[in-house]
Amino acid sequence: MPVLTLSLETADLSQLRWALSPAWELLASVRALARPAGRAVHMPWLSAHRGDPLLSEPVARELAAATPGRLPGFLAPTPTSPLTELDDELAQVRATPIETLRHDLTAVYGDRLPAILHPLLRAPRRELDALTDHLHRYWQRTLAPHWPRTRALLESDIHHRARTLTERGPAAMLADIHSDLAYDQTAGTLRITLRHGVPDQAHRRLEGRGLVLVPSAFAWPGLYVKTIEPWTPVIRYPVRGIGTLWEAADTATDLAAALGATRARLLDLLESPATTLELAHRTGLAPGGVSAHLHRLTRAGLIAPHRVGRTVLYARTTRGEALYR
Image 1 (tube, rainbow, N blue to C red):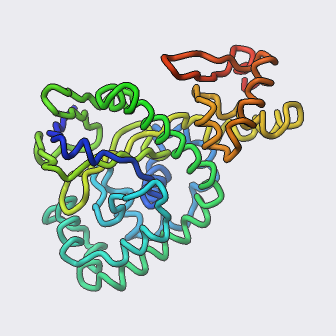
Image 2 (image 1 turned 90 degrees about the horizontal axis):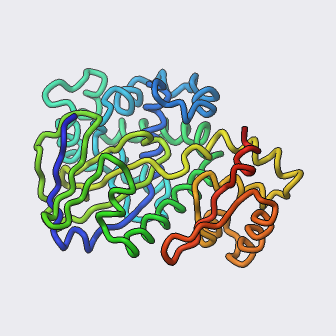
């Protein structure tokens, strides 16, 4: 598989940050619907929405699904914050400068722009307004009902990665994100194995532009990298605990009658080990309250604490896992 190597200067590492991108989740979910092979982790959601009308809208289908690994940059601008909202991103898409639009389409299609996309160049304001309207309605139908749960999962991932960076450094944090990432701290290079497409250049210098890391539900199981200007370089990677997003919800509901809704939710979230603070962040509960519920689950033999350095992680026991079979 092709490899992209990024040179990270001190200025890039000092600007390393995490962000969320609802627009990226939206577009990646369209790709999953259009190309469901290998997306078994999303099967409950795919089954519910495989006939969505957006898949028959030619411009949206072409832009979101026909070019895996090479999404035109203007459709999913590099996000700037963990608080990013979909409406803000779609407004940014609608306001894309014509020069940026041309540049991004050329980067993906070269001189072979599909005929269906020619109107984007002839009447960009009109076409971008129509496209974002289609995407917004699609979001409301398919993703908005699940966004609070999805967002909680993404925010928990950011919390975990930031703590890993603080405790173990950038090499360990990046390696833990995905097996296709390898950071050589001595050389100051990040090696990225690409499963989608071939890079225009095998080696790139970020030259102080920084790097944004974006956890994603629909990036699973690969990585998606954007380094072309004018965008801040971004790596979108699969979120931790993605298996809990769809399939565990029904089980948690069934368990609520026996355990109580809060403890059932915590047990559900502990498909992947987590700390008390992570669980508090994901559920919106006070850490003290989470701790009390974890104590009850531990006494029942459903979870167990494990110390890793200065951190205590909770995870399901064999008895706890048996409830999900």
